[in-house]
Image 1 (cartoon, rainbow over the protein chains, first blue to last red):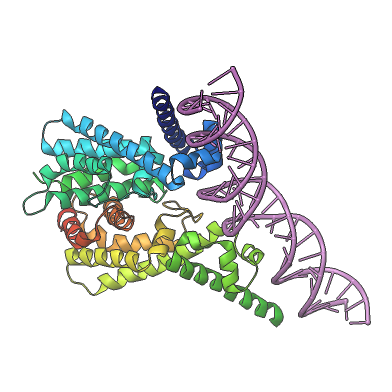
Image 2: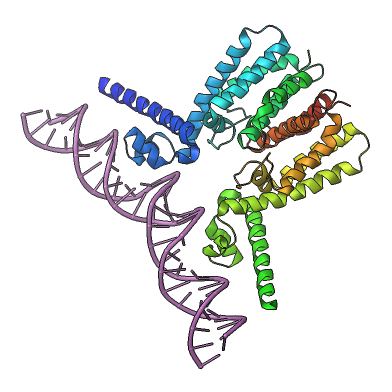
Length: 192
Length: 192
DNA sequence: TCCATTGTCTAGCGGTGCTAGGGTCGAATC
DNA sequence: GATTCGACCCTAGCACCGCTAGACAATGGA
């Protein structure tokens, strides 16, 4: 019995190692550098071992995305918890969101840009993703204004933030005036 | 002399063929399917011919992006030209933008997501890209409101639209309520 | 007619994600 | 304690990728 348990523990540990290594490598050198060979070498196993844990590279990206979504939800809630005033909470949320994206670009991509084989905006969407959206909704729903469905408002505000993140990181927007752009979004979109 | 001219014409024609074929293939099957082998086969030349026109795949994407940016500027201007009222023009612009993205997803990606080796938000940004931004600015600058720099407003509104496009197309947002989201953006962000 | 240049192709390099098949090693059984 | 059996992991290889070197043919000019 105990032998099997030990093996299962080791397996779980190795799976965590794979995800952590993939994430680390992606943050260091970008997702293009995360090849199955390099990843296998870093964890000191052969390539096929990866496929005994994940169906393929896509699922590894998906695992990183789920981990990241959980962290993002925590970060957003932490940033808004101690703030008074709905509008101020939204400003704090926006800053926290952009900060998370800036600090974890590869994870952000895994969650919002890459194909990790995950279902989004769906009933069988993984819990971490639903919860990340819920974290946004908690603060953003308060400033939706009359006649605007909180979910729809959250989606729209979120899309605006996402647009800023991706265009800036892709070099399409100069990074200097990010704060002013965020201020504009909060000032105009949020209604209390 | 004339021989050289004829050859140059043929070369230019073939270059257009490469770009058009790459674009077509990308729209049909996605950019991942645009491999140098497949592209070469479609234009009925061998792979190395591609490299006598472009430095690599990146530059081909860049060429598609420039072509697309020109068309997008035309589309945006056409949609706003005959509309009365600044606010209504912005609504028309938003619809035209989303429509362009929906009709030309691969081209949209080439312009705004992929690496085509182009300079953005820079002095030596290619003219088509500058002009596409200018087309947005023409209508959006009118509703920036007092104390908000038109360029900054345009960037922000554009980012919001871009966020809607990318999140929707990546399956992160359900496509059903796009119109309501756009209405929200126009209603709240635009000031006249 | 010969040469030189231009243009194009074949073949191949090192890389990718992924998998088939063999071998090894450890746990359970007699 | 010996033996069998099964789980596990690795080597090797597939088809494909972007890109390029070098051979070869065709074409215009001397």
